[in-house]
Image (tube, rainbow, N blue to C red; front, side, top):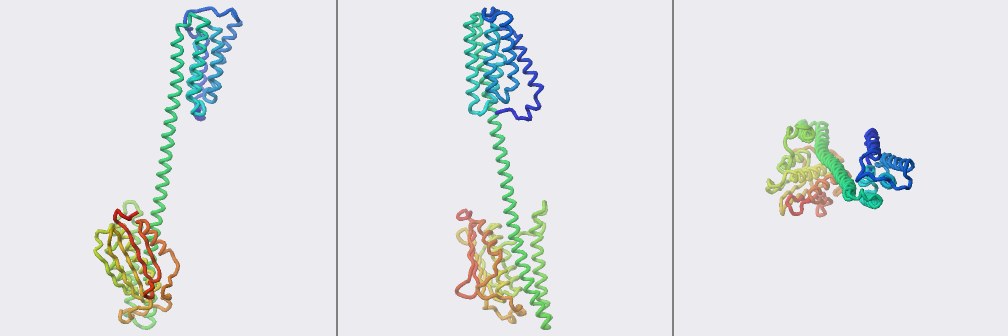
Length: 411
């Protein structure tokens, strides 16, 4: 682990000061043991010159201890060996800093401890050799080895601590990225839910408005003012209901605005939905069990399934009739919606004007769209399933859905 570039740039003054102080200590600090003359070899000015040069080299090399800790350790240990032979009892100040730096900054991290220990071992060997050359310095041998071991251990421990802190920072960053990703997924799921709700609201409301407005136009052309008034009244009530539910949906998106526009629809509103669909030209027969124990989210999903199926019946049934059966059994809501295209009740008996021509499609045919896909996605959120297709035993379509809400089968 090397020191970050930004930190190295901020610390040149401190680095220079350290190099100067260590070099001065290497040259002028007190010696270990009693003063003793150097060997005859290179005695005098030559020996002094070599010792000073070695001390300078060892001290100045510390400048690169961050970027090249292993090389600096090798240079300082070698320089100290020369300096210790020329100057009896000199202490390895630069060597101790180099051993520490090797433990902290060596790369790769797995090699740092080995480099520091190896440097400390070589220094200990130099101490032993110097103790043989200068016996009066042997009394300090244990102390010198102990200080060297402390320097190596301190470097290794600091490196380990920094690695732990780096791992914690990486983990925190990973958790933060995961939280951001989870928030993005939640936002996407919320947008999808809102898109499905908007589709259900707009599709159901506009389908009814389109059918009733066409009926009102035909009634006016036929001079049937009362029937036109009834159709326009149905347009008004459908548009107001859709607008109110749209306001509620958009209201929950505003902070502090939740619940201001009423509650979310559910299975308790099926009778109103059936009555609204009947006013749009499809006679609805509703059979529903006691559903008060169904959770609100599942109740909303089941309501939307019925709403979408009845909307398709209005758009494609052409004055048909429909049946809706909803029950709760085995920890799941069971929904069945069937329309009987081509088996419509007489408009006159129903008190309604005839539907506009071209409103109906052939039995079993449905226009493509996203309604069925959205229905399946909504039910799949609870681990349920939806089937939709021609009824087979009669003209028209059948939609079936099973939506779990108990612990078993819900996903």
